[in-house]
Image (cartoon, rainbow, N blue to C red; front, top):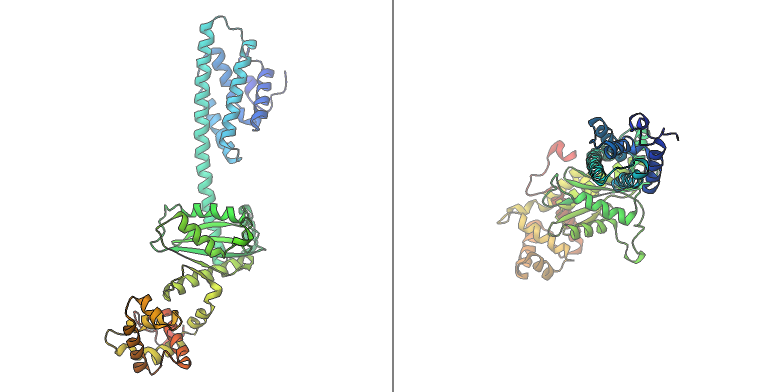
Length: 413
């Protein structure tokens, strides 16, 4: 007899006619063929041998062991197909050799034995696969929970850096390297059941490889943590800004939905990730307030607007002094502000501004003249244009005139 320590309990429960060495050889051959651990056959060969010899069905404690083996296979990351292949391989090997071990007396006995074995195989594999799937779903939920917690702590800038490094390692993140955060905001919100995050992660992994990448959702946004390197699997001639790559993928996979994508700058370390996230989030906010037409914004391109909004008291004074008189116009300040925005955005070309606003050139020039008469600042004068433009940008950042301008301590916050 050979040592059957790899399949504990088999020699005690196997029928006398099912030689231990024979079952050991079957288990080893099946495990080698399927490239799966021998231990996953514990109890399975016993119930098959008993089914072939006595015709009995699997007992509950045997199926319970198989159920536990399915869970163990999932936790070890063994593919489900390989585990099923292991069980089928063991079954046909045992059935092939069975006549040499058990002398069947007649055809009816063989038929009954075959039916019993097939039933046993079916029950065992059904239990195995069901347990494997349940365990896999549990593992996925656990990983998603750990991923969300890690992303939240990284974006918040958790102070326990050593612990953060340890938690990030299983996800392939080297926090000593530089990373950047990219945010994607759908115009219509992101439902909890939306599958866009999974789609986007597959795309990003294809572009950047399977390391240094995390994709998650947070507060209705898609959050992407990426290495500060160019995509390794894109042709050098077609490399785009990462924000453009993400936006293109979203439009391609979710046609009909409007997205705005913002990217922070890359920084090293765990605190760098939090800084990049804050930049990307601020870029999204600024782009929305400024009503920018571009769907992709980068933090580096929004620095001038950050300067404006940081000195809020000065911007409030500028808006009140320069644009305050526009409230005296019939219809209020908003139509004149829209005209100034379009005029500056089109390079001070009245015909282009009229096309953008879907109105006549005459209306545009009339409104520009109205601005000049009310404020004393001529939009066509280069010396005065800059002051007007900065005031308009500040008004949009503070959402004036829809909202009242901050006063007192609020203006200095």
